[in-house]
Image 1 (cartoon, rainbow, N blue to C red):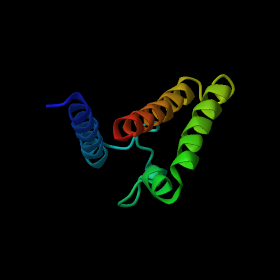
Image 2: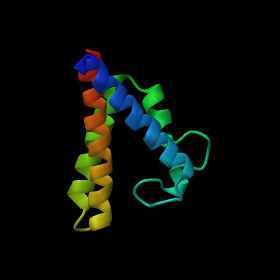
Image 3: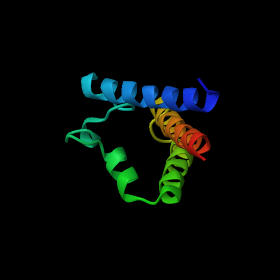
Image 4: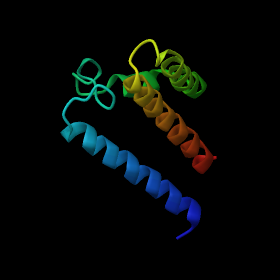
Length: 101
């Protein structure tokens, strides 16, 4: 199997696995806050669906900066975990673009 196809399948498999975890996982302040996951679609997915890709990437990047900026004054380690969550989404989005480009 070509490496590019293998990477696409790997990314898709990861996304499906993350979706599965989201459906079966209890609420968590970083991974699955109740106020963002109370409907059939999570807020982050709705935002991605309605934004142009460059706006969504900027949104993710801005949230990384926000949570890193404020961690000492608000949220502590939980803010750093939220920054990490957004950074992981940003990295995955950019990898997906590279695999599709």
